[in-house]
Image (cartoon, rainbow, N blue to C red; front, side, top):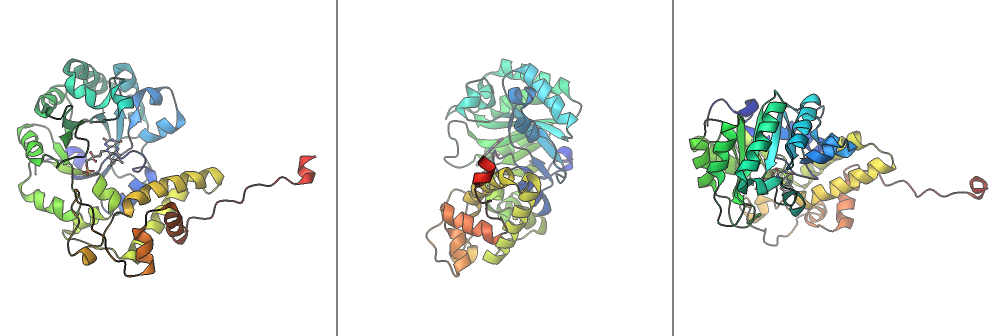
Length: 349
Ligand SMILES: Cc1cc2nc3c(=O)[nH]c(=O)nc-3n(C[C@H](O)[C@H](O)[C@H](O)COP(=O)(O)O)c2cc1C
């Protein structure tokens, strides 16, 4: 691994919209994530002062090292959003040039910048000049299926004074199809003078541990691996695979429920927000298939074959419908929603 690592961190919780919020980042920080990156914030909305958008770039009280991620295609907005991120305690600003979503790309932001080098330079310069904290760029291999512009973009970012490159080894067009091009990631890391953090398809701690002895990357960012198995960071830190049984996963979920309620509150709005988030989170947590049943650790690109639960709780963990998710969340301590308020005749008059 290259020395020194970006912001002193080797293992990052990657940015994951709708999941990597404060409570979730607190959970993975507890499992050993060195650094956490916030959910993507659209610079224009941050600048317009949207409360929820501003919240995305603010450091949480439990983030160890926090990167605020911004996206957009307007240098003024990006510069202002970066400044606000610095003001609200971010340790670094991550500029997302990998986002594939049409709503972002059609406004000149995200992955479209991979194919617009002149516009990219303007955005990078604006962000670099706006803040004194380190800045990183998140890129993909390219835009179209056959693109490979990562080296060109990495060179541009380095020249613009960026301090690190996060790279996902797939094109925007490929989304999540095929396997992540780790040969490309390693090549970019070998050529760069700044730290390169690789991401893509790291499903288990063992995937990271295998790469570590020979990698040129200064670190790794985990996304799906961490949202399906948040204790992946513990596996990496302890250097071996860890299986949590159904009860232990329920304990983990109880911790996440407690962190979520602490963040969003227990009133009607807080409970609704908590339930929505936790159900989304459970879409990923319920994809965990115990290696002691399968006989192997599930790789990222493989769907688990059908497996037979060994207990009633394990069966709950396997089921993905909302009713089951709510049942799991109740067991994990999420309170029932308040009864709908009824207006008495006396109140009405
Ligand atoms: C549900 C979901 C939301 C994501 N949101 C973001 C995001 O907001 N910003 C970002 O840079 N990447 C985002 N990603 C991409 C991941 O950070 C990561 O680059 C990609 O999933 C590859 O890594 P993985 O194989 O470890 O998942 C998201 C991925 C998923 C699955």
